[in-house]
Length: 411
Ligand code: HEM
Image 1 (cartoon, helix red, strand yellow):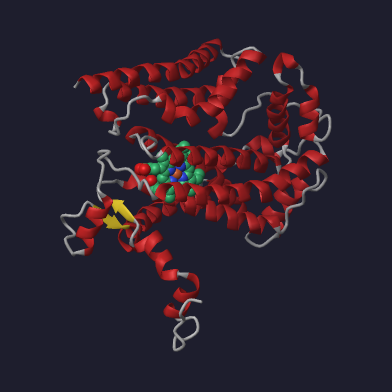
Image 2 (cartoon, rainbow, N blue to C red; image 1 turned 120 degrees about the horizontal axis):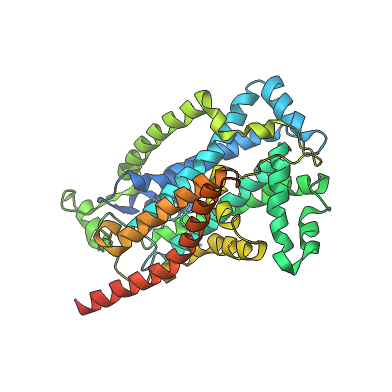
C-alpha cells in the first residue's frame, strides 16, 4: 500500500493529493497545460461555448420545474405558467431561448476558425471529429427543445422534419410512424422528444465535451501561423523564467485570464440580448398553440438550420434528401478531403483562401434564402444555385488541395 503521511490534515492539499492525485490533475489540466502565445480572441470561442452550455443547463433545470410534457398542458405551462405566474420564469426562458440561438453563432465561428487555420489537420483530426459530434448533438438538442412549447411552429416544423424519414420514393412510412410513435406528432412524440431533450442528448453532449477536451490535450491547440512548437522545450523555458523567449503560456492562470476577459465581453452582449432583444430568438408563430388542422402559410426552421434546409428545398424529394444528407455529414470528412498536409492560415494558401470565403458567403446566402417563402422565382433560383455550389465546393476542395500538395512537393 502506498505511503500516506499520517500528519496530513484531513482535506488539506497533501491529504487530497495522496488520495485523489489532485496536484497531478491540476498540472495536467491547468498549470502545465501549455497554450501557444500566438493566438487571438477566436481561440476563446471554445470556452465561451462551454460556459454557454453551462448556462443552458442551469436555465433548463429551472424551466423543467414547471414545464409539463403533455400536449394538453405544454403550451400553457410555458406561455402562461412560466412566463407570467412563476417569479422570474420569463427571465429563465429568455436566457434559455437566447442561449440556444447564440450558441449556434459561436459554434459556426468556432468551426470556421478551425477551417481558416487548418486546425483539423495532422494529429488534430479527432478534435475535429469530436467537434462535429458536438455540432450534431447540439442540433438534435435544439430541434427536440423546439418541440416542447407545442406551438404551431413546434408542431409543423416537427412534422416537416420527421417527414424526411419517409425516405423519398422508398416510401418507408413505417419509419416515420416509429419515430413519432403515432401517425402524426402527438403525446407519444412530445414525451419522447422531452426525454431526449432533458436527458439523453445532454448526457451525450457532456460525454462529447469531455472527449473533445481529451483530444485537444496531446496535439495542443493550433496557432495563427500553424507553427509546429516543441512544447517541452518551450515549457522548460517558461519554467526557467525565460518567459519572453518561450512560445507558450500555461493555461491557468495566464491564458485563462484572457479567456475570462473575452467571456466578460461576450456576456455583456449576451445579457443585453436577454433583457432588450430576446424577440429574435422567439418565433411569433410559435405563440399560437399547435393545431394539426391549420398549416401555417410558411414553415421554416430556426436560423441555424436554414442553410441545410435551403439545400433540401429546391429539389425533388429524392434529390433534396440526398443533398440534405450530404450537407449533414460532409463537414465530418473535411480532414480527409483536404489533401494538403500544410498547416497554414487561409490567407497564405492562395486558392484555398478563395474557397474558404466562397463557402462562407454561400452558406450565408443559403441561410437568407431559406428564410424567404419559396414563391419568388428570383430568390428560389438564387437558393438553387447556392445549393448546387455548396455541393460542388467539396470536389473543388479536393482538387485545389491536391494541387497545393503537388506544388509543395515540387518546391
Ligand atoms: C459545441 C460545443 C463545443 C465546445 C464546448 C468546444 C470546446 C472547445 C475548446 C475549449 C477548445 C480549445 C480552445 C479553442 O480553440 O477555442 C476547442 C478547440 C477546437 N474545437 Fe471545439 N468545441 C465545441 C464544438 C466544436 C465544433 C462544432 C467543432 C468543429 C467541427 C470544433 C472543432 C474544434 C477544433 C478544430 C479545435 C482546435 C482549435 C485549434 O487547435 O486551434 N469544436 N473546442
